[in-house]
Amino acid sequence: MQRQGEPSFRESVDLMFRRAVRLMDLSPGLEEKIRVCNSTYTVRFGVRLRGKIETFTGYRSVHSEHMEPVKGGIRYALSVHQDEVEALAALMTYKCALVETPFGGSKGGLCIDPRAWDEHELEQITRRFAYELIKRDLIHPAQNVPAPDMGTGEREMAWIADQYARMNTTDINAKACVTGKPPHAGGIQGRVEATGRGVQYALREFFRHPEDVAQAKLSGGLEGKRIVVQGLGNVGFHAAKFLSEEDGAKVIAVIERDGAIVDETGIDIAALRQHMDGTKGLVAGYPHGRHVADGASVLEMDCDILIPAAMEGVIHLGNAARIKAPLIIEAANGPITFGADEILRQKGALIIPDMYANAGGVTVSYFEWVKNLSHIRFGRMQRRAEEARSRLLIEELERLSSDKGLGWTLAEDFKDRFLTGSDELALVRSGLDDTMRTAYQSMREVWHGRSDVEDLRTAAYIVSIDRVAKTYRSKGL
Image (cartoon, rainbow, N blue to C red):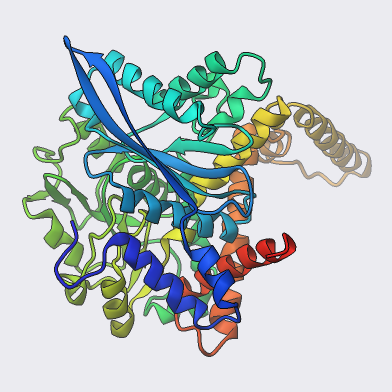
């Protein structure tokens, strides 16, 4: 919901874009070409459900075709509208450029409450929506590749992939028309967790740089850091789970649509999610922690790291001045409005921007797309060769120890880990970790290397826009 005196989500993206290009040497024509959305297709289609025809409105927006295919999720929500879809498509362009995935930016949306329909009804609706987009090449392995977003997941992507295959029976690359599919339907291991895992890797990389940590008025590593998470959907759940279970951070509050659960000693994220699975996504009634009915107020709680992981615009002019977190990482798209961003930066808060922080999804989607085009799972050809080479080394070390009477032995857990070749999941996580590290370093180089760049968001836009501009220039624009 747009608040009085505040720009819309789309206007916020444009304002942040313009703040960055003021510091760049771009011709006005090229600047405008990069900024504007190339096209938006609006479809209104009918589906016979429950004895009558229901009409639905959907969108597919293409922001930039400097690289093809274009890439971007499809969200199902009653709040979906054209401006939102176009803003998200623009963010996808900059996000793909920042993490160096070879895609332009796109986004789709269907104005629907997915909880209002049974599974077979939702399948009918999804297939009809996909049909309308496929016949216009707005879903195509070489032109436009959707993925899950809010309100959609593996199930919907499998339906879309099957619909495309039905309409393109001789396309050998049909499975590459969409990413985020379940592994048995051409998906890739680690895709469901990818965006949350990317948030974890982004924070790990941030905490590798003491100078940056000090700018956020923090010290040390992730262990013991108090975290507030807003939204325990796919992204928020995985980010919270990994940070608490693997990095020793402490999630002290989780905010959902019916309020928040607060526990200063730390929340068991898996247990809370299990509770929510039985209450249709509600946190009320969870026995371990205090329920706060006004969930939005918990955004203002004293903590070390705030992770908004749900909708755009949750931190706005009305509450930005009361946000206490010194470090905010945007796991959602556009959770901080342009006006709130200004207030937070003036207060000294450090923001890790959405176009970087939640790029794990599109990064692993890229891996899935490559897997579908190559028609072979990652690790299939090299895994056993890796194990054989490792075994040779272990055997030689053990022989030398025995022959020379050195008397040392290798620990069994080391041998087991060393002798295990990389499977698909290990390779996906390795590729994602490398991507998040490299992208952060490219932002950091601009942030610290230029006196006129004060924050990571501006640095991210500069890196992204520069890469898009170079691609357009190489095409003769």
